[in-house]
Image (cartoon, rainbow over all chains, first blue to last red; front, side, top):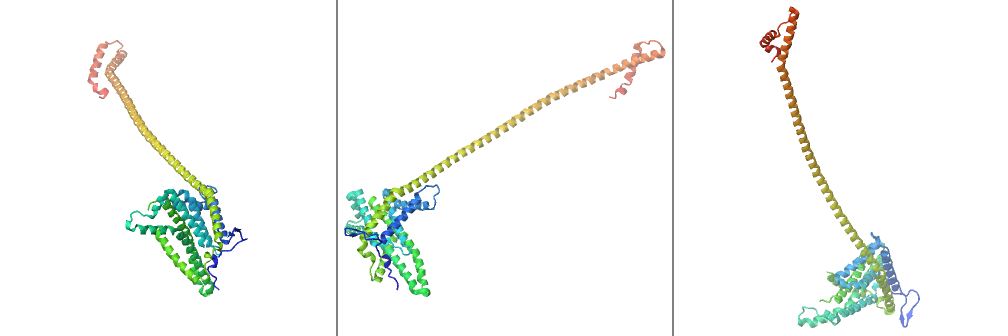
Length: 244
Length: 196
């Protein structure tokens, strides 16, 4: 009777079917939680920036702390040149964080547990960073694949490895987030269903696990958003400050 | 450090994935492409909107707020610094004034004391001189008196004796003879009358 732990990831239509040409772009539960997360971000940060008091209230403090946190993260990893991309990385971090956190509420849908979502984000970052790199350095950007100080004999091998590692960036970036979220939620579901199936006598152990896992998952939700953002910063750093 | 952590995470991810794939026979809904286009569309739309609103409306405001607060705090700190310096200067001035006035009062006191002492000395000197003079004068007078006293007494004695003799005998007696007698008596009893 244990529910399939993967049903929580199912996408279903909310409202009518919308089609553009042959493409189905219906509003789904995934879309709903994207909208909810974005609205939550906008509401919080709008309230947090509405009035400027010398002594910030809680929500203003939250907004300003997030701002300085992300700002510091970017300047630490990518330097002052990355300032124009601050808004993008901030939005990215907040979007992923809020999607992850909304997923922690029971019976909600975790947007970031879908490979297609994370992959689109990662691919966008990858393409964007590559374009920025070529704009800033021209073909000199290809020097990224030729680390300095490597013996000439090893160079062909190193270059191949570097290219593969560069090309696998969007995959690793997207799979990391997606797999973390999916695995965590699946595990919580599995332990949750153990509580039901073992009943009042044996259910306490998985319940304890469930509680602990919830804490862990909240940590992971934050950490993965952070990792996603900081890796974006690192990639951006490669493109902006080319030194290998 | 972070890189190491990321590698560990990747490893754990793969481990979990394998487990999930093994446990699952129905497959993952994530790999069902039915709603991929929908998700891409909505992600682009929502994230794009979020990015535009945040970057154009919200973040500049937060940034301006932070800048404003920073500058205000800086201004306040500067103002406080200035006031502190001012008050320190004032305190120094005050101390100077106190020191100066202390010195002044000391000087004034000393001066006045000296003046007064001088005055007192002068006055005392003049007073002493006066007293000395007076004493001298008095002594002179006394001396004179003392010197003239026997003569007067003699004179009185002579006059009295001539009167008494006139009354007793009824005739005038030569004054010179009487005065000779009185002088003689006076010389005999000189020590008796004046005690010195």
